[in-house]
Length: 615
Ligand code: F6R
Image 1 (cartoon, rainbow, N blue to C red):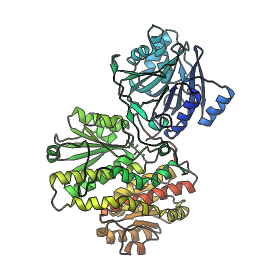
Image 2 (image 1 turned 135 degrees about the vertical axis):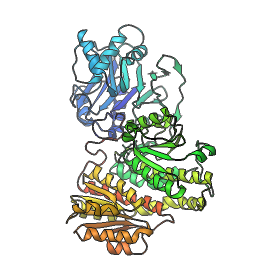
Image 3 (image 1 turned 90 degrees about the vertical axis):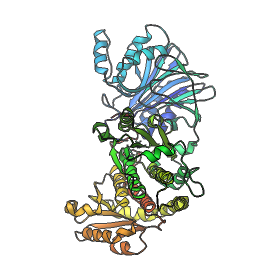
Image 4 (image 1 turned 180 degrees about the vertical axis):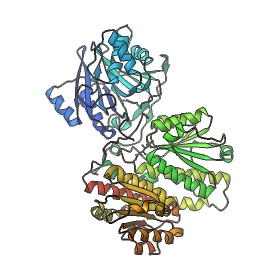
């Protein structure tokens, strides 16, 4: 997820016996969370290509389809997030080439499109839109008219493109054939019975099939209703290796909840179970597909690299690695790391945390580490994603599809995997004084604890009403509580549009305190008994300046409750770190209910979309 200069389009495609327009439309619906400003569908029919497209929501496209119905059993669809050219009907995808021999949809950016456009215009081509995509359609059309198959034409055409892209193309003459190519933008293929599909993300395939192939970089696919062929950039056939996706269809839809975000917050007890499944024995942790013990004994430093919420999970990892293992750990924003010329020890481990596994800056940072021969480990949710495939080793968070733009359950699973990793290293290094068995016992109970913390929801609804007009909200805490506060603040600002100031509580008097006045809120995370006294003093500092304090706490002494204006309290586990992790749940609920009370668009906050596949 990132800010609006990214390209996060939804792609759909179907070939089989059904009405392809209906299938493609349904697929686009399931990709709505990616954010879009226009949409369109094209079909093959009687030796020609028909298309309908419209700026605005999918409902606008549905109305347009009613006015101008099209039908066919081979269809491609697209929901666009504008990059080149504003969100207009003409700029919407699909795009024809000049002769209407081919039609295509595209996700990504063709960096050299202006050069190509110039070249084509000199040959007499004219363009209807301002998009890089239409230029690509003309290039592919030009290659196709040289003779040969559409697959070959696309393969030759993409050699002329620079940038990140996934294309899905149909021609008017190759009936029942869809060609797709992937270079740095995600694309998944679905194998059905007498039908095949493709999409930019898995939820759009699940109602139709569980057999999924994540396309590799630079590969091309040719889909017909009874066959799927994949070739590499040189045209050599490569084996088709489908994976079975276990997520059920309901898991990719909203369930009974008003928003995906709320559903995903409530899924956390289940996510904790799923994430730990098969990874805890009686008294040890077990991580599949991990480096050998020799490697773990050699590692002298860990660099965690991630963006946004995943970065915040990384901070929790740092806290644990240093506290439990005394292993020096730094956390970098991917975008800073990749351009920052980082100093990397040859014995270090680079850990890439990413829900989508496709975030462009994180992927680029990974490639930088690989070029420097640094060991790489991914902590990723989406199986088959680029980061998952390119890391030396990957541990999956097993959180299921996360649809809401604001990440919730992925964070919890990322922190849990980092905890499992710390415990794994402790086992290997036989860290003195650390009883892994105690952690295992407590981790087994964590899901139940999370369930109990969720029962605070009615209180968060009431508090949301009282706090929704805060002009500014501080998120404060010490140690791990400060790190969780960073995540709580991100939730509040991204979905409820309330400005936040997040910082370790001890930093307040070095400047931020100047912002406190009547109406300003301060949310304290207070789960660490060793800092209760200090936190109470910080609470007083806010109140003395007429700010309102809400504490989220597992403190059993009563001191935090007594000092605060409001509290959300839960029973502690045996480990402060896990209490800090649990405190994110009330923060997520609070952000959700404040946003809901303000009538904000929760699953699709303004200026944001879910996965960022360009810089
Ligand atoms: C915030 C959020 C983002 C993502 C960030 C990284 O709620 O979701 O900050 O955490 O865009 O995305 P991934 O984890 O897919 O690399």
